[in-house]
Length: 229
Image (cartoon, rainbow, N blue to C red):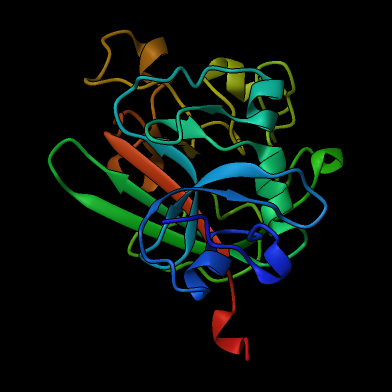
């Protein structure tokens, strides 16, 4: 099917606009948020979600520096990080739902959802938690309402004497290192070495600090959809 266009032949601003226009097949689409160049995203059309991160098989190295996390990396069909600048353009200053789906190696899954906004690069892409959390899990990042993003080469975390991204791996909205890191190293089993065990993909309030998760997906859609006419 041809690319669905928004009004006046413009590209859609995001997956949710496509969803409202009747698109129900998930896949890769070109979008253009206000003030941005066009770029491709993976749309999950179970509800007009834009996928911003996916880990499935460890095929992509997430131990990347600031510019990579800013611009995005990986494969939209597989494991990828969409890019902080693109995510910021998608949400601008609006309120969005962030849905995080986690899966372990025994076939169990969990979801966490909250409302957030995201600052631009001048704020180190600070994640602002705005709204209530839903899902069965306690929020592993929710004790901090505002978290700037950190990588090995840009330390903005809340732990004064440690660079969490260097201590762990990858780039994330680190608080004091040990609560969550969905951009850690992909391990198929728990590493023997203690210093390596810290570096996996984890969500502390579910499987604990040293359980490397099998898959994670992070996706966003506009919040307060019910309020729209």
